[in-house]
Structures are given as structure tokens and as C-alpha cells.
Image 1: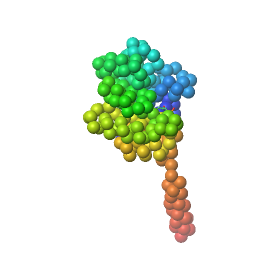
Image 2: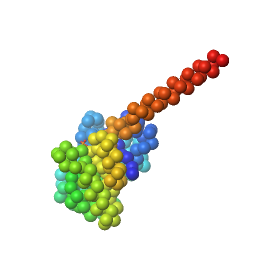
Image 3: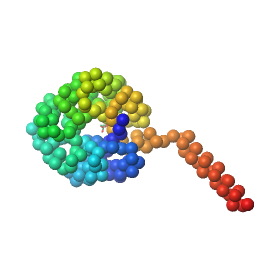
Image 4: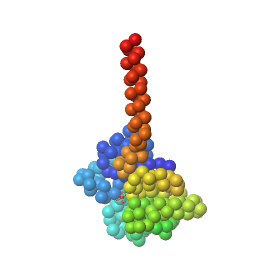
Length: 220
Ligand code: G3P
């Protein structure tokens, strides 16, 4: 299983990369808007930092032709760009063109098994079911991840499942347990995965005990 970082914030990306556990980044228009920076400039910087790891960049057009045009442009920015396409009619039309042009794709806003099937049949490189947003409306987001992983496996689809809209460390544990290939996580969730009070207490106790012995030895 791999972890991607779901952010457009450079400090978070640098910090997460320095830990050596992040192999890609996913962005969306909301995440980039939060940064109040130029779209292209920020994507170029992220691609440089994350290279050769994949960086998902979402199209903003509403029609297939526009989406494809955007995809061609974004794909020319860096070799590790992956085009994020919403699973709507125009998105499927655009995916067909991107697949033919050998552009890597991440089908986003997946909320059902049927949508995930359409993504795989369209030749998507990745499909991103939104776990947290399904949980928000009273559906079991992780159950959907589990179904998609099983069905993709049953039919040998090479499309990788990215568990997205991850809200807390338990989502990561569950995504790993049901076989998601990737979880894309906010920086706060990455920090949460690492945190355990017993680890902090243990580190402090080891240091305190060693310090006591050191002082005794120095007195001798
Ligand atoms: O990866 C998708 C993610 O950015 C959406 O997360 O928390 O807005 O549902 P959220």
C-alpha cells in the first residue's frame, strides 16, 4: 500500500517527503484555492518536489473537449502529472481521449461501485472514491472501497483504488485492511498516524533513565 498527501501546501509536502513515507500528491481546485497562488506555478513546484511520484491535477472544464485540452496542457508541464477527471458523462468522453493519448488519469468524485466500474472500463490509472463525504451523508464509505477492491480484483482491472476524502487515522487503517492500493491523506492525518502517547512516554522514560545513570557515573 502507498500513501499520497492530499494537499497543495508546499511546507506540508516538504515535511511529509522528508519522512520518506509519501510517494505522491493529490490536489483539487479547493486545495489550490486555499493557497491563493497561481495554479500552474504551484503545480510545477509540487511536481518538482514530488518527482518522480505522481501529482494529480484536476481539470476545471465542464465539457469533454475542454477537459482534454486542459489535460494535454497539464501533462506537458511535468512528466509526473496525472489528470484528475470527475466521473460524469463529459468526463468519460474525455477519459476515452486521454486513454488513447496515453495520459495517466485519476477518476475523482467516485461515490458508487457503478461509477468505479465505468472508471476502470475507461482505462483510468486511478479511481478515487470519497470515503469521508460518503460517511458524512450516512453511507459506509469504507464498504464502498472494499467492494471496489474486490470487483477490480475479480476482473483483473489494473486501475488502482485511491481511498480519498480521508478524515482520520482510523480511515487509513480501514483502507489498508480492505486492500486499497493507496490512501491519499491530509497532513494532519499523517501526523495522527504517527502519534501515540505511550511512544512519547516511552521515549521520555528512556532518556530520563539514561540521564540518571549518566549523572551517577559522572559523580564517580
Ligand atoms: O481527496 C479528496 C479530498 O481532497 C476531499 O476531501 O475532506 O474535502 O471530503 P474532503
